[in-house]
Length: 145
Image 1: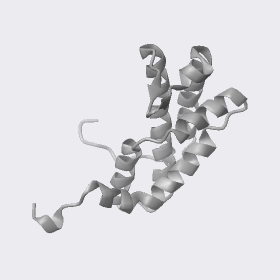
Image 2: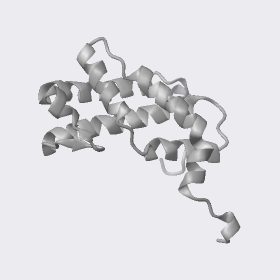
Image 3: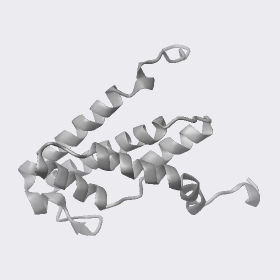
Image 4: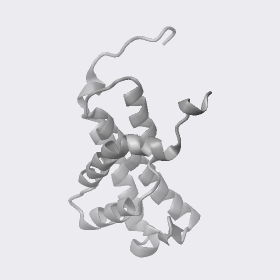
């Protein structure tokens, strides 16, 4: 590959900047629960940041396929919510004291509330994905499947 055809991580994230900002907004809206402790834990986890590699890959794939809708951002938030839920559960199982340079959520709210929050985040992500309209359209058949 020639030097002119290479792209670095900063350029990739610059390309995705607007979509990643929109994704953070989606994540924030989708992690609000009717149970105050779950909302607090969800906001704490989201505010902890992260690289957002998984949704970035989804957004890049959508750009590669010339997708024009807002669905990539919505589903990118779903991917990040699922990832966040796994981190909450991992921290409980591993008895982690920190996550991303901050106290792990389980050290702030306890294991029981964090298990509940992690489970709720999973179910919320699945709910958002299940009601996403393009998932109900027929998809092209792939040979052998």
